[in-house]
Length: 231
Image 1: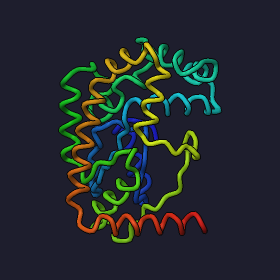
Image 2: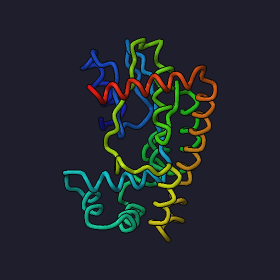
Image 3: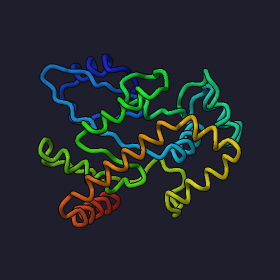
Image 4: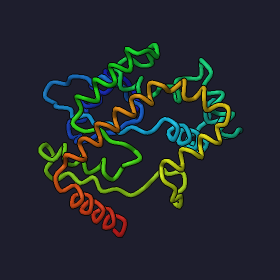
């Protein structure tokens, strides 16, 4: 879903049967809708890995716009160099902070980071892409009182290379090497997202370490994922 909070409010009013909604493109704040209680959850990704994912996604898209054209017609370096320019949209420049701050696209300043961090502290749970399985367990636990039958078993989709067995750190280091001299400006353009990611990881680890029977819950999720894949 794409749109602003006003659009979301109208959408929810028109579809009262909805129980869940996901989006890569919906910025905070969420609207207040009479008669509805919203339980927002977010899952963040390390900015370096996210940049590589955005590039691969734009290469695969079946639509034509400047982003997809740049991605298809050049390597990661040329795409990133273009995306770092003003006027190309903040897709790889503190994008997660902008979306969570409630001020999109905003001025790319400390006020946005502070607002995004404050939002993290109010959420029922915070997920990390690099710990997706554990994040799904935390989300189930956070929502089970409202949705007793919740089941977030999943199959991997929209992945760059399903056979890639490298750790997140190894994949990140490979992207950093590929960026070469662009790494420094990329890190500078994502300083707030890096800080936000660190805060999200701290919240994630605090919640995971405080979860009783986390290993059993993770085993149960894995079993449901295998069953889903076999069906």
